[in-house]
Amino acid sequence: MELSIKRDVIADGVGFSAIVDTKLKTNVLKIKFITELSEKEAPLNSMAAMLIGSTNNKIKTYSEMSDRLNALYGSSIYTDTSKSGDCQFISFTASCIDNRFALDSEDILGELLDIAEDCIFDPNVSGDGFDPVEFELRRRELTESIAAEINNKRGYALMQSQKHIFKGEPCSYHQYGTIENAEKITSSEVLKAYRKLLKTAVIEIYFASPSENLSVKERFSEVFSKLEREPQDPAFRTVSPLKDEVCHVCDELKMKQSKVIIAYKSESSNKNACMVLSRLFGGAPFSKLFANVREKMSLCYYCTSMFVYSKGTMLIDSGVERENADILTAEVENQLDMLKKGEFTDEELTNIKLYIVNSVKSVSDSPSQLINWYFSCYCNRDIISPEQYIEQIMSVTREEVTEAARSFAADTVYVLAAKESEENGEVDSDE
Image 1 (cartoon, rainbow, N blue to C red):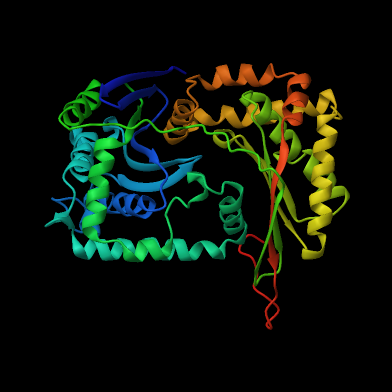
Image 2: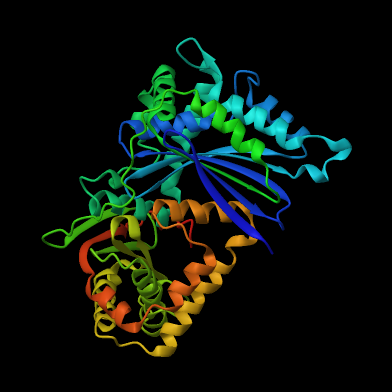
């Protein structure tokens, strides 16, 4: 199965990566706008993303856009906003089946790219702002999305904890911003913010397809080279400083199950060893936290760990009964101390590495996964294939894992404590 990737710089601060995999049956274009996460600009950029993904100056309504895309064999255009570390990512994605599956030699890809180009460079503007009708629809959608996040108590707890874990850092802000800020923004402010993105954001374009298609790169080379660009390089990795004392925060919410988030921070640059450590600690069904804290001691409903390389932070995410929160926190610390002493078997280490390898092997299953893989590599400043990464993971030694464990120290313990209502509380959406 032949897979190739080639990245070229096509304009100032604009990269184009062509990913060719002969087994693919679809074409996927993804354009990533990368900028520093800002409390003020987060909702503006999120709104801009929603607006350019729903209409353009030729296709004025979302309903008409849906009809046009459906006519192209169910093609799709969508946008999303995310964050990683101190960066905000605005993603524009267009997807369609490959032309070889179309009837009468129809150029599905060409028609889709025409629409996508209009969305990005000729948006649905009225006067000095976006179309007012579409703007109000998308603003309502944005505020409802932010408000609805409290319904997922697990995700909500993680979001709230980051305000304290990364206090004073851009990473503490939500990728969508706040409801209060979203309700205040104007259409002209959003258009101004979008034009700023086109001018100052670092832009990475990915095109995954079953065969080489140089016309796509040429198309975007031409349009982006015409723009006035002053790209501002984002800081993809800014290690979060360890607090002088462990920060303890407890909020309350009407629900049945309490949530405990524990943050450990490290200045280690051994990304692979930290990743293996995180999985060994709590990132697999047979990890230390799962086997001991959940199964043997029955202290929680779930207890997992994730490593955020961009911030040098390992997050422990757990759901517990309120009275067990302090006991769980102490036992998590105990389990990490055991890893620091090297108290894990070679078999456990091998199984964890194989677990990671199995997840990496699925990367080539879809064009979106391939794009996500190589974009992650770009952010880590280390463009490697999944096969190369597998070799690196398998070569991680127990000494490296132990050293990585010793580099982590407790920074924050955040508890979202259950407070039952008179009606016996609310049921968590993740239970």
